[in-house]
Amino acid sequence: MNETVFNFFYSFAHRSPALDLAIIFVAKWYGLIILGTLFVYLFEHRDNPNKGVRDLFVVGVTAVSAWFIAHFFKDAFSTLRPFDVIPLVTPLVSESGYAFPSGHATFFMALASALWFYHKRLAVFFGISAVIIGLARVAAGVHWPVDILGGLFLGYVIGLTLHGLIMSMTERFRNRKNELIAK
Image 1: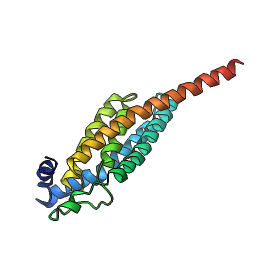
Image 2 (image 1 turned 120 degrees about the horizontal axis):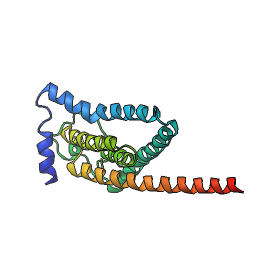
Image 3 (image 1 turned 60 degrees about the vertical axis):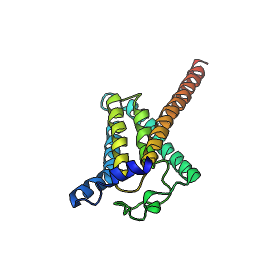
Image 4 (image 1 turned 90 degrees about the horizontal axis):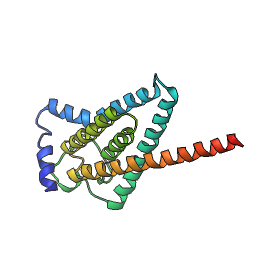
């Protein structure tokens, strides 16, 4: 099943230079563009600069943590990429290391789930973007579909868990600060 779905999406690669450019753009550059835009948006909160810094901190910690956690699991599972398994697959983007889970899917879904608590529309946009980037990376020949699904699930769990931990720590810090001020 995994290989069948992979073959379907990979069949879009190497059809035309324009389609290849579109796949490469989404698989490689689209995420960087929306990530940069997100950080500028969060940093430039006009209604409350403190809220922007808080959101930027939570989203930043979540994103960086997701990247490291995904790479830990990549090493633990040691899943080969499609072009390492199927000799006829020529990837459209260069990639190395193990495949499962997709670091891109994990990263962007973690962002989406962390954003859900602050900016629901942005969260939906990043969730959809995580899926689109993942599918483009399958079409580019560097991931199996299960890599994307695993990354989406892992990113969702990381985003929710880290948001909860950060909010709990923030609340404890706030309570401790209030206790010190009251004394």
